[in-house]
Image (cartoon, rainbow, N blue to C red; front, side, top):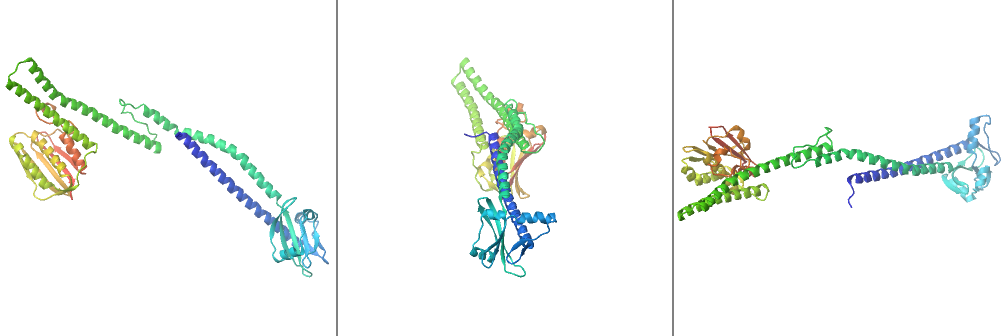
Length: 465
């Protein structure tokens, strides 16, 4: 089962906070324990050093001498001498001991006394009255034998402080975690609120309202990026739907004329009796209309396959000059049949990388378009050149020209400049669309320069080898 994003966000934040809380608790507990341990050792060392100053020995009798009128000395000595022992280093005999130390039952053997004199240290001791830290040190009076001084301090206050701190962590962690979950839930709900509003607004976009756009807050954050990306997608979709509607309308217009002609021929054949020759003439007319429809369907299929990426282009060296000369020679009879002069100016080799068949089709489409619209007695010139590291192919005609407002739409499917003239000129309005696709797939560009009454020039630029 996949959890909702908000639930996953809350769980992630809760787990993260719990881990941080545990890590902080363990780290703080460890730091506190270390600091309390250091303080306990420092207090014990201070007590030991103080007793070294106040202890006096007379004939193996140890006594603590201090100024009882000094409250500071009195308080210090009473605290430091609460747990202490003095052993004679010669035989390990206990010569002095405080009452509280006696209750702990700590007794050292002569061997242990010798060991602690040889290596003075501090160690912890577990007794029936709790944990104690005991320091061992050597005292050597100016005259007399050496003595072993043992001073102890209770570790119960330190342990109690640590236990209280641990209880505080445990008892406060659960309420803090619950409060944190509530805060995280509120923050997640508040943070994801604009996203929910954006989703609700996106649901109101339908195929009939593709001009709607999501509002941006102007913060430049991820939500604005999402809104901008969605608006860009809507714009692309709106353009695609508009193209589809225009395509459907244009296709219906293109199909309506031949279908109407075929229907008229058939209705006339049913109404009026005809001779064999008239039937043959009608059948030839029907076949001509069917051929037009077949060419239109084939062009549509080719363009659809091209735009869907199903057509793979070859990548080989193509001499654009040779290609232009060959295509010009092939179409010259067609131009002559309309009393149009067709010439090619390609004196030097210009090589590009691409598909020779598709580049040939590109030039055929451009020349076919020029031959259709160039009047009798006109000229069409094809030139190939190299300019700034790019191959340039120009097709110039002396036709009627193209209005400036029509130039941006020339490469749209089914678009024709003069619809009143379209019925007199064969064509489906798909040739330039296919030419644009061929140029784009060869990483080039195609431009048109024209004005009414001044002919037209189609300029193709491709990367040269």
